[in-house]
Length: 403
Image: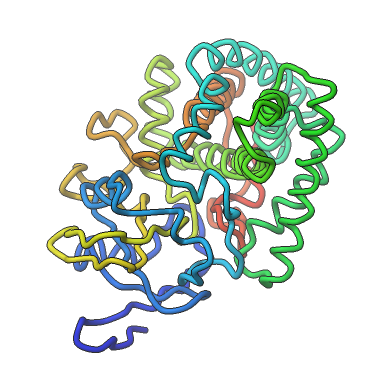
């Protein structure tokens, strides 16, 4: 439903509903083609915000210093969830120079050298888990028996979260990333998980290990980071590692299984896997709705529309990844595509800190599946695969396979 909003035009009510498979949300898809800078009203919060969907416009908004994440603090901006996912004072709601300082602290952990070493360890884990799955025999739930445990173990080891605590953290993940909980329940879960990571950081300060929380705890001891900043960083990385990677890679596996001709060519030329992963990242709509808004700090023109100081703005990266002015036949999967870089990990200062880690995990897990399971197939028709509902990140609830 659209509602008039005075002389400046129409506000589009956007209430995302659970979508199966890789079905694209119809409203942002239509706006991309018809109204690439549009006003939207989301299920929670107050007022409306701009939604930007075109590739170059999205890059502009995501990188222009006149758009602020920090100024969203304390503002009930219209949003997808009843509670704000990123806490105030954290890296997700910081602007330079604070944002630059915080990103610099974690840069070595997610740098090329660390990822190269971690890749070897991840490949060994994937091989062991694949062998265990083979020995158990089909059918198997690939999301819960392979992808989920892999992504959880990798991020837990990297941050220093004890394996015994993963079930508790997983339960918090479900509460925080829900878009159908209450504001009070969401805030209660965030308080619990914040307390957990504050305690873990205190423990790591006294008993450091080779992990990111230990490094952040040491930085806190020298004044390089505050406790709220440390907790926010740990929560953000843990939740993305547990939830986003699990859902993205499970969906990638599903897409490969329902595109057997393209997957067969990939099996025959495994060196093409990195390019295929990038195309899958471009093609898959990874979330229901949008992420964090920005506030305009000085008038700026985007796509021929003037955004005024004080207005809220969202970008929608999945729509930018389907921009027909950038990609040929953008709604079609093409594992050999070699066009503009996708925006699945964002753009600008808030480009995903764990992008290199997520890409590495996807390459390792998919490469292992292609090599170890030459006859891998869905165990049910595609229409019977259950997809997650009531959560921010899209993905299969279960992915039953056989071989």
